[in-house]
Length: 410
Ligand SMILES: C[S@@+](CC[C@H](N)C(=O)[O-])C[C@H]1O[C@@H](n2cnc3c(N)ncnc32)[C@H](O)[C@@H]1O
Image (cartoon, rainbow, N blue to C red; front, side, top):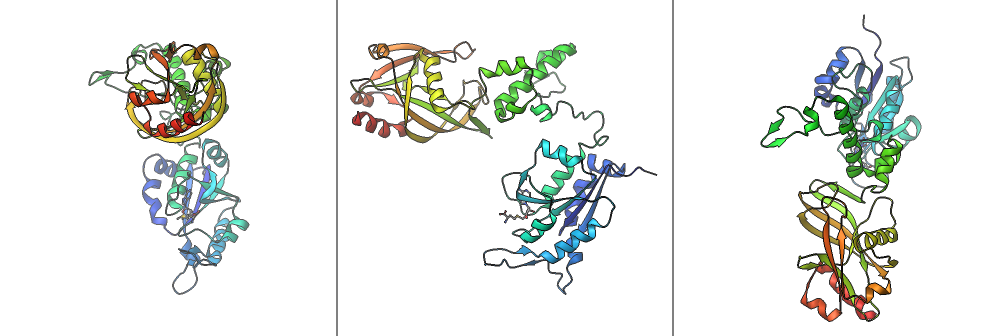
């Protein structure tokens, strides 16, 4: 005799057939066979009593699509609830629900029994949700055609938290979101493939060194890719201190595009010139500045950038204008995308900044970008009168009309 399952799922759906493959293959199939989880599928049409087994109707107040009727859904929930002794925790899969994440998966895995209601069409009559549902759960900020795929994802994520469902080889420790950190990069044989070697430490046989490397990669990856996880991540005081100087940029990589907030300092001299800079030896000029960091105010970002690049203490003023900029280039910057050709989609925030008079008196001066890193390079700063802007290549060009207007008003 097998022991009672650790967790029972009752799924209410108009399409029970959709579940067959995912629930019978691989880890979930094995967990069901071993009796660790029990998944019962219930076809909602069983509770539609008219001749056509109707489960949907037009929305009151008009509008597109159909809505799932309250009577069959209510009856189904009541009937299914009575099929086992344990009271189920009732979940409706909905794009309007609480976003499924590791913490919610852990909470759900503590229940003995979960009832999952899958919506279709425009959704379910609101009275069902108000009077029978304990929690609405979303799998992300997008809409799919029905609650079945979201329910399968929830069953998968919750089941792998049940002891024994994963084999010893699929350790839960250190996987992504454990301790609020992403997982380290994984490699397998061969150690060299098309001239690309795996990191040497992994073939050193030194387990302590491997562990240190993996831990450092987890922390660095999380800082690069998901700085939003850092505030609640389990970090040692040393790890946290090491991140505080560089808590990650206010940027997000999606595919080959980096979305980021770029700050530009608009510094004008008392005689109406503007301060531009360029990589030493390059032909393209731009306003000085850099990327906003997570948790940093725009004013603090401008102060930091000017201090780091030019050793200059500026006083930030108003945001003068904001622009969306697009560019494609091989990134030399730290952080995600370094060395790759990536598209950059930037929100450029142009901030007025007052420079100390001694910098105004110098026509040109030097600076440095990414000081102290392997990507360090020299910068050249120079003051330009508005008329001289025509003689040089200033980027982004989309910013020039606003800059000229600002200089003219000075
Ligand atoms: C086409 S959707 C209805 C969307 C609804 N009209 C709205 O705008 O909120 C049909 C059903 O798919 C399921 N669904 C769609 N997107 C979902 C998501 N992101 N997370 C969980 N369930 C989702 C829900 O059960 C929903 O009732």
